[in-house]
Image 1: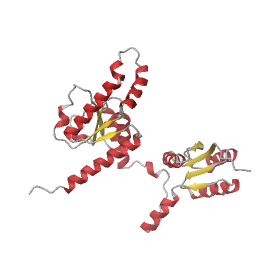
Image 2: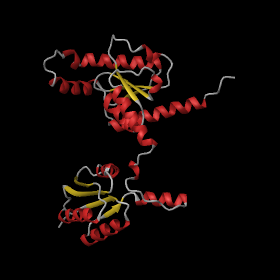
Image 3: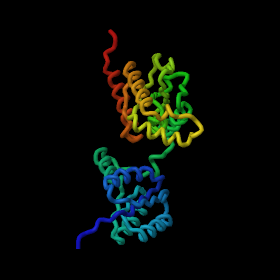
Image 4: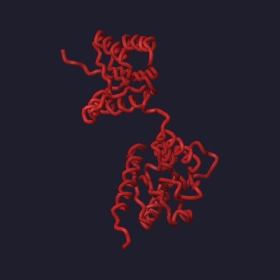
Length: 283
């Protein structure tokens, strides 16, 4: 009898912290199997045997793949033993990585529950970046552009704000400016500053589609020009010319996720910094 591929599977994600790291890893793996839909069961903050027992009951009732990031060895042992009894796969997703670290560094690990969320300098840097970015969204430039790490330019609906927020969560102070034809950009942007400037564009069809959805929620306004494809194409051409004139890189976000756009921005920014470091000093 031929094997029938399931249309879905249960995926249990067990963490002694928020589960954010585990969810990201699981999503990266599950997306490779688009023909099978994962039903996620996220179990965060599992730190006691009683909490684990409740999770194990759910695994027994809905068996499937079990992934975990629990550092308590007693809980690890109990979880893996029960999964063996139930004949379900179980993996500590960070263990292979930690073994490489331990082998290379020649030092044993020091387990820390929720270690990636400790209140260290990097944590407060990211909070500071997020506060800065929220205060300087949609055209609100800081008085001193050197306060910003990144400045994003783009016409309406090129994902400037969500990209800025994502970059802020990575610790980069980001501000974004809308580009509108026949409206001059802020003079401060053309003065010397240390912020990395990048332009975002997308296909006219993509922007028109997004704007039409937006216009449905703003029916009391005349938005014909806002959603007109020809006008949108002109806006995009204007933004490309502006960026080319000032040597600012442009990223087409039509088929990029927010994460991919942000990663490209960070890469371009680091490449610019490396080029500056390699420039010979004036003799």
